[in-house]
Length: 478
Image (cartoon, rainbow, N blue to C red):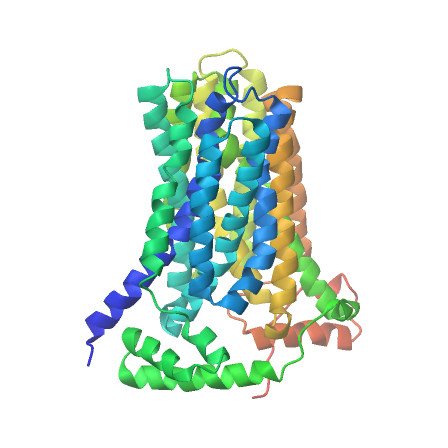
């Protein structure tokens, strides 16, 4: 008979090992930040502003594909098995990026790396949600978000160390990239020793195996109780009609999907990933030397980790709408100030420090309010029958907007300059605030059933499309 301590230890190992997928997600999206200045040199890959954007954003295009098919593959092969496949892809794509002799090979390898990133973005949270006990599920799943920003911070720190110590070596960027192979190996060998999701096992009628897994991470009583609950849910889902494109003809369903897509776009048009991918280039453009920019960029990674911890804490205490609006006001103000000071302090030695301070302020609002709310609301607004269709649409849109910004940002920075580029993002921020205030419902303290009934009731009563965007709690009969 295992003790409660043993159960927690077993679950703890599962969390630590599986969230290495989140760490790789963060490292691989963040490492390009410091690698680009060296990679762009004439004696290396000789990148132009456009090809810089292609190299950085090719990962994001792959991630869109990986996110769409990652969930399907994990349903077919199992969560654990899919993470094993992704760890192999992480490793070989990392090696491909490291050894790339030209832009074409680099883009192809980055695209494959993106498939792994996108697959991890949907598979790891699903695996965690299905392994976690109900009362700790939210906290455990959000640990993956913390590992993502921790991976980005690790990339920024390693970039700074290597850039400072080996900056005179032209191919130092290859050392920056290859380091990601280590957590990929740890993920592979670690997952070999981890169990499969009990929910997936039950969906394949492997109930005895599922019970054994639950008994490792739950008490005997809880294991049997949860086994029964999962079996009942799986049976209900088996008789449930799956949502399809035809359902979009229904006004309330179409509205939820469009709100989800809007949330995804809002999260990206703040320009957060222009800073996470090109922070070093931004600081260089502001006036820092490459080594100083690499060191300064660590502050962006550090505030992201701190703000994410604060954001996770705030989620259970503050409404989604006010938290998101406050975050957007903060990010938009920061972007506007970057645009203004870049024009007023052009050529001044104070400019790079002012820009660094404002990017840190921007990320405090983004990672502390906008990003946590985005993923939480996307998980809340879709009723169970619509979740696959809705999340598929929204995650695809999120990655494609991310790809577009990653592709165009260095072109804008080179073509119209730092100030004008951030004026554009500030304008997009105003549009995002307007969308949230006009269209986004409050979901805090509402069950999925209450939300669904509210959406239905507005249309059943003939409420106009505009009025229907205010959702209020309703009492549903049990």
